[in-house]
Length: 405
Image (tube, one colour):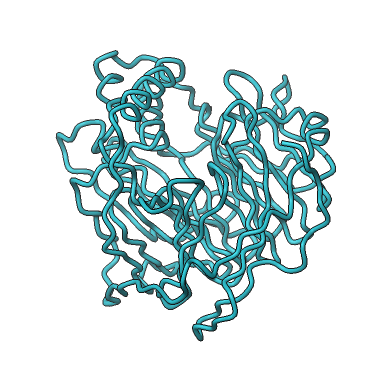
C-alpha cells in the first residue's frame, strides 16, 4: 500500500487547512467540467425564522459513550433501522467505528486499531450506504476501506491519486469518490462501482499552476454531499453557491445567496493560527516550516459555507454563519427547487450533521471540545406551506436517551 510520503503530506496540508476553517473570499468558484445550461436560482426566504421550532429529542448517554470508549467523534450517520453509527478517531492511535441502538445503547464496535488487516486508517469522514456498507478513505495508506454495517470487514483497496471523500448513491455497489491528482493538478468526483471501477467523472476542478498552498487547498477541498436520488451537491467555502449535478455531470440547479461572510475578530484569528499550526506540526511530516506557517495563516472572514447535508425530504441544509445569530450553529434550508425555506439556529457547536430516516437532525456538538456529544433535534417549520415540501422535520419525539451534559 502507498505510505505517507511527501505527496500525501502535501495533500494533508491542503485538507487540514480547509478543514480547519480557512475561508476567504478572493476567488470565484471554479465551474464544473461538464457543460450545462441550467442557470442559478436566487434564494429567497419563504418562512419567518421566528416560527421555526427546535427541540432536543436525543442525547447520547454518558454511560453508552463510556462503554463504547467514544473519545473524538468525527462523523455520524443513522441507517434505515435507526442505528446510530459514529466514526471515532483521536490522534495518534484511537480509531474505531461504534454503533448505538435507537435508544442510545451501545451495540458494537469494529475497525479498531490492532495488528489485524481489518482495521481503520485515520479519517475524518465516512459514508454509510443504503446497501449496508460503511466506506471511508484511509488517509495513511490512501486506500478505500469497506465494512458491513454489522461490523464485518469487506475489503481495503489501494487508490490511484489521493482519495479524499466518499458519498452514498442508493443503487447497490454505486458511490461517489472524491480524489486529488497532484501531478495533474486537479481534484474531481467520480461515479464509482464496486470494487473501485470508475464509471464517469461527475465534477472536476483544475488548479492553475504557481498557486500558493492556500489557494490549492481552497480549490481541492470543495464540499460535497449527495441525496436519496443520487444527485451530487458541490460548493466552495468562500462563495455562497451550491451546484447540484446528476451522475453524468450535468447541472440540475444552482442554489445561491447574496449574503456576505462574517468577519473574524483579531482574537479569533490569533487563536485559529495557533491551533492550526500546532495541528499541522503534529500531523504532517516532510514539509518545511515556512510552508506550514503559510498554510496555518487564517483568513479574516469565516467561510460562507461550512457543510452541506440533505435530509430525507430532499431539503438542502447549508451550515453557515449569520451575524444576527451569535449563539449556536445556523443552517440555511432550501427546498428541492432551490428556494430558501428559512434558516434554523441549533443550540450546539456543530462538527458534523446527519439525518435520521424520519427527518430528525443529528449533530456532533463540540461546545466542550474535550467532550463532544451526539445530540438529536426535531425541527418544525411552523404551520405554513410553501408548496415545496416544507413540513415538520422529524416524527414523534424519541424517548429521552440521556439527560446529563
